[in-house]
Image (tube, rainbow, N blue to C red; front, side, top):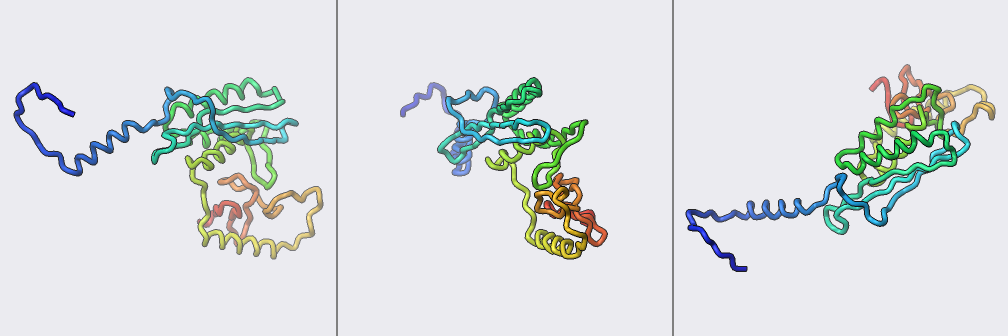
Amino acid sequence: MTKKIGQKIVGYTVATEEQTKEAKTKVVESNIIQMHEKVSRPEALAGSTYKIKTPMSDHALYLTINDIILNEGTDHELRRPFEVFINSKNMDHFQWIVALTRVISAVFRKGGDCTFLVEELKAVFDPQGGYFKPGGKFMPSLVAEIGWAIEDHLQKIGMLKKPEIPEHQQKIMDEKRAEFEGAASAPVASAATAEASEFPPTAEVCKKCSVKAAIMMDGCLTCLNCGDSKCG
């Protein structure tokens, strides 16, 4: 394409290969779509639904998180949460559930780092007390369980990394558990106290992962679920 120069040329420089690559990178980056509130909702969204069953209600809650895929088919493809819906036959909490879903959806659409929502929701405690989930995990409130469900989803789409226990630490935990179970000489627990848990029935609630899996071994409280230990 020919371009006419209407002014006198007073100087010029030859672009280096590095400058050319940098200019091309800027052009590509300028075309990358990032998550923000002006991104329009597509006709169809992919999502996942999570069932939340608590002893506080006869009816379960169904949490649906729909995701939007940005820059689909390119090297910059991103999957980000776009909206949240919570449905249940129980209408006791309808008002605050609607408010919660709208606020969370607005934060998702705002863009940026939305993972902070997980810790904020998990830190909500019910003044009437929490409850234990099957397996021994303690839930301080219904809102906290919603936070756990959102965390599972963000880990699923790659926004959060699932914590992994190092192999050597897992080996120590397995040895401690075997030692603890071997040293237990108490009579078999009755059916009323026996819980459907993979951890010892006498275990305490871990303050880090909220699972009833902390045991006292050699004067040190150690969690068999996440590996947290008072002895370091």
